Structure formats: C-alpha cells, structure tokens
Image (cartoon, rainbow, N blue to C red):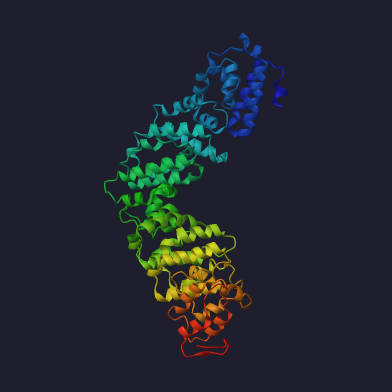
Length: 547
C-alpha cells in the first residue's frame, strides 16, 4: 500500500510521509519496519533523479541529514550496499545508528554484510568514552532479543562481537565479583559464546577467584550443544589452564565443594569429557573417580580401573560398571583388558571376578545377535586376563556363551580356560570338565567330531581338565555310531586309554568295549591278550572270553 501512496508524489510530500512514519517506529513490529524500509528504498531508487534535484536537497548538509530526511529510523533495515548505490557513505550509515538500531542491525540476518561492517558498528560501542555504553548495548540487546525470540546469532558476527567485548573488558575483569561474571557470561554474552575462539578466554586473568571462574564455566556449559568439537576443546583447555595455575597444587578450587562429583561438575561442566583421568588426579590429588563414575567417560573409567590401587574391592567395580551402558561394554574392555593383562598380578581375584561377572551377567554373549567372531574377541582378548578368577558357580554362565556356537569358538573357550587352569581351584576345574562333557552330549552330540581319531578328539576337547573314564567314554558315543567311532581309535591309543589311572572304574564296560572294538585288520591286537593283562583271572561272558 505504501508503494502505491508514494508513487508519483513530490519529494516534499515524501519527506512528510517519512517523518510521520518515524513517529510510530517504536510501536511497530520488526516485520512491519522491514516492509516499510523496503518500500521507502524502492521509492528512492525509482525516484533517484527527483531526489537529487536542488529542491529536494534543502536542509541536507551531509549524508546523515539525507538518511534522516529520506528514510528516518527505517534506514536501520536497509543494507549498506543499497545505500551505497545512492552515494551514502558507510561512516554516515554506521555513525548514525543509536544503540537500539545497532542491536537491531546485529539481530537482523544479512544487515551486517561483512566483518568490517560488524567491527565498524560494534567498534563504536567498545570505543565509546562512555564506559557504560557497552553495558547499555547489552541490556538493550537482551531485551530486544527476548522480544524477538532470537535463539542464535550468525557465527561470524558472534565471534567478532564476543572477542571485541572480552578485549574491552580485559581491564575490568579484576574488579568483577562472581555476580558480575555471571551477568556477563550467563546473560549478556549467552548468544555470543557460540562464537568462542582458541584465544577468546585467554584475556581473563587466572587470578580471578574460584567462584568467579565457576560462573564462567557455567555460562560456557549452557551453550555446550552449540559449540563445535574444536571450540569445546578450547574451553576445556581454558579450564585446565586456570585450575593448574591455582596456588594449591593438587587441590585446585576444592573449598566449599560437597563431593568430587560436585567439584567435577562445577569446574568443568560438560567439558569434563575432554580430560584424561590423570589430568583430574593432577588437579585434585584425592579425586575419587569411583564416587564420580557416573560423570566420567569410558576412557576416563578405563583409566581409573587401570590402576588397581584405585579399586578398593568388588563393590567399587560394581559402582563403576553401573555407570557403563550394556552396549558400551565391548569398548570399555577393549580399553581396560590390555592394561589388566600388563598388571594382572596386582589385581585381586575378587576385583577381577567382579569384572568377569558383570560381563557374564550383562553382555548377552549367548545371544544369536552376537556373531562367533565377536565372541572370539571376547574370549581371547577382553576376558582373557579375568578368567583366572573364574569361580565354580560362574562356569555354566561362561559355557552358555558357546553352547550353540561354531566348533572353533567352542574349542577357543576351552583353550583359554586351559591357559589359566593352574590358577583355578579344584571345584572350578571339575565344573569345567562337566560342562565340556555337556557340550559333547547335547542335542546334537559329537557335532564337532569329524572323521579322525575319536580318542584324539576327546583329548583336544578336554585338554588338561581330565578325561572320561570307561563308562563316560562309551556314553559319549551315540549307540548307532559306536562301530564307526570305535574303529577310528588305533590300538596304541586304546592301550593308552585303558592303562590310564581310574579309567576302568568297576570294569563293567570293558567287555562291551572289547567286543565292539574292531581294529585295523592288519593289526596284531588280540582281545584275549589285553583282557588277561587288564583283568587277570576274570571272565567276560559277553565277550565269550576268559582272561
């Protein structure tokens, strides 16, 4: 509508319209101001010859007068590039802005077209001889941004204004109290902190109080999600540098802290994820990582648990493990297990058992969704340094992992245990033997037996955890496969088996074995000779032999 009204009117009438609109400027919403500014600019561009006539330049002594007469306060919403086409100087444009107009120009995307424009507009604020102008600017900025529901500022603009502000405040920081730091970092600079750079916080003296420092951290923490990884690391370096420069080495800013969790949150916020556990210990020598475990990252937790002296017992392990999600267990033990392997002797059996039981209870390694190759990594790498603490009640849980797995993984499970056999008590070894036997007599018995020597297969299956006696030996062979399986055993192997201690038991199965055993036809083996050697003076009706 304004475009229609201003069409073909004289510059005098146009100036009257501009003056009238300017009186209502403060009551207009931003969108309306922008629309009017666009309409006025369109008139000026279309009437450039008219407005440059002497009659239209009366009472105009400079570019500032021209702006007031032809655009009023609406020039705030006109790009400088458009005004440059009308031969208006940059100095006149930016020098004519009030604090409120400067705020509007900062908040309106695109009105500050390049870095130099930002520096020129905001430079008039920080370079003002009136020290209060900086505070006044931010007060207007906070109220205006709240009215306009602004939640972010262009990153380039944020960076320039933030750094110019901090440099201007450098000489004032020493006079700030904690409440003043809170005002600046949690209110005034909130929307500009996402523009933080590697040196932004370096202008803040390291001599400020711990309370003041905590207000800075709180302000930065509030914009954590808006920062890039590099920016977050920059903030963490500031926190580390500040705390490391405190006079109480190893006890940085510990006064009035309720707990180690409290200390960690208030002095690092979310930036704590970039600290190593060693750095935390260096800053607070008695830092209790177990108590603060719910706030630590996996690398920090693994570093905590890599020093056995920091774990007072199984309960500490349970506390740490409760801070780790189930899906994070594999990554955690990838970090921790190699360190336990190096220092295994200094970990108590109770501590290792607590780690092991967590995995057996939570990792879900028996699930079909976990591949054999993943299980293999668990058995041979992640769990290997813990298995020396395996207890009898946990053996079944361990073997549950491989009951339906491929034969290679099943054998790996036994081999890993065999490598730590001497550290296991007799009851645990017996349970291992029983579970191996269960593997061989399950729903699909002898599924891992090929066509080689059955005797050698059993030796490989049981390794050093014992060997079946005669009765158990025969029970492992399905009735329908006995002739085939027994014939795979050489006479030398049968001799070795039968002569082993405790093999014969009460001898009840010997005759049946000898009757069914069919050696190589070229062998010189004779039932009667072996029967007389093993059972002199006894008879075996089933064999039809007397020994």
